[in-house]
Amino acid sequence: MSGLGGLNKSPNGVVIGLVQLQLPVVETPDDLARQTAKIVAMVGKARRSMPTMDLVVFPEYALHGLSMSTDPAIMCRLDGPEVQAFRAACAEHRIWGCFSLMERNPMGNPWNSGIVIDDRGELRLYYRKLHPWVPVEPWEPGDLGIPVIDGPKGAKLALIICHDGMFPEMARECAYKGAEIMLRTAGYTAPIREAWRFTNQANAFCNLMVTANVCMCGSDGTFDSMGEAMIVNFDGTILAHATTGRPDEIVTAEVRPDLVREARIHWAVENNIYQFGHRGYVAVAGGATDCPYTYMHDLVAGRWRLPWDEAVVHKDGRAFGFPAPTRRFGEALKAAE
Image (cartoon, rainbow, N blue to C red; front, side):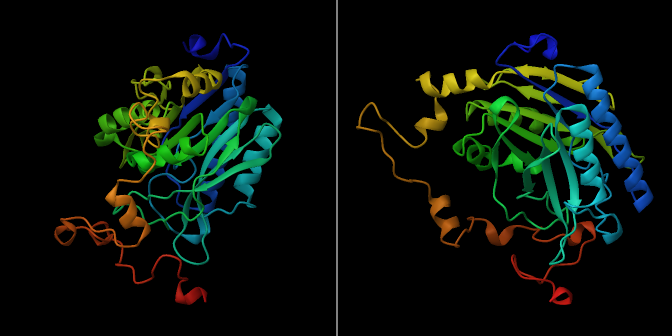
């Protein structure tokens, strides 16, 4: 049940609006200011169109478009005018909001960051994309982990960005830290459509967690983003799905975090997030709690290596016009030292 897209809100419901924002072209500070104003206006539209809405979610690249520009003139800061405008809009319209920004990084390439602001205009969640879409994206890999917060009506809320959602470990980490709703914002284009759909459903079902997912939409004259807003229930069923590709459409549904909590406690068969750490509890008391996964041990030990590692062709961004990096993760650019 989605409450007719959130029109009929239950006492325990959280109504989410996913904005399939028109893909912009942003090349200058003036372009950035205009796009900021467009997003602020859409916050107002969300509130007016759905008075029951608790959270409005904007896709990755909503502010910067898909140019992959790292021009310092259009990079953002958490204390910059763009974020201040978003905070003011959320406070004015008494609504939670999720926003995307390419964030200035004095130590290297910019971060691809996401923030969640509450209905009083306070910054509540700050996340840096852990898995940039290489080799296409130049962003610095995130270094803040995955925060989980108390969101609207106390629902446990997490945010991941685009390519993050192709790694099952990302959704599992969100759920392990308590997330009942996982947002996934993206700029994906049409070739990823099918993978987008089934990963959004798998991320939900495998973790008994609602996923709310949205891409940019429309064309900027070069790229065509696909929209594909999807809200998926914890059992993997789709509550809302936009398939028309209509830019600036706001797709809504009511979700029930209380039923997520109930399922996680009372489900037996397919309580996957619990059973992952309690293997075979019918046969052995408490289940096996070891870690039988080689890839986990190797990653922690710093010896990750695939059997076909040496044969992999693309290991940097040169195929997409970026120079091969020489700086290691965590090191500063020499010019910034």
